Length: 200
Image 1: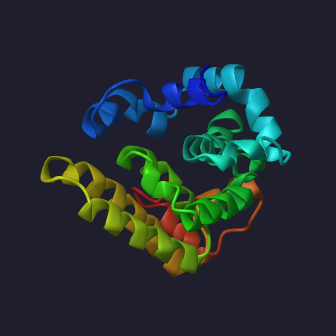
Image 2: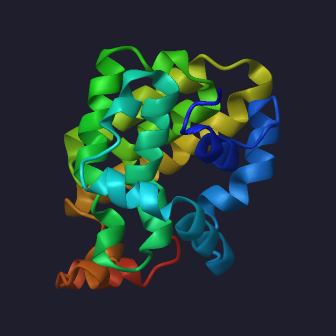
């Protein structure tokens, strides 16, 4: 019998066998902004997301794959289902705590490298510099562990994490979230937001 979270992991990671093939197949889902994808996330997994945000599905976190799926429900899918609303970030704090707990149990090292990207991505979403620094450290280790053929792919994830870390080091928050969260941008942030690449 399949684990309850298996449909979510298959949707997110597909069935390809290599990291490069998985990324090629699923990259537009992971990092694209398409109404059709957001609708599919809501239709297929919206109930699970609501349960996760309410503190449910904790039993999933007893196994590495279930832990990964619960992290996705708290961190990635709200950004799709509730895009451009404050609720898109509503699972972040719980996701960060869940990731920290799983890493302490060595769950991350029991996942495929491409799956670990989305564990450490939770730290990349944090507006705390210490958490951002932890993210960079985890990605550096992940890149170093990859065979040469995959290293460029994982180096790209590290590069993106470093860009996030620099923003937090400069501003202490992500200025591109200000409008959604009702925060007033400083003059410095307004200048920053006018530049290409300032909005992740």
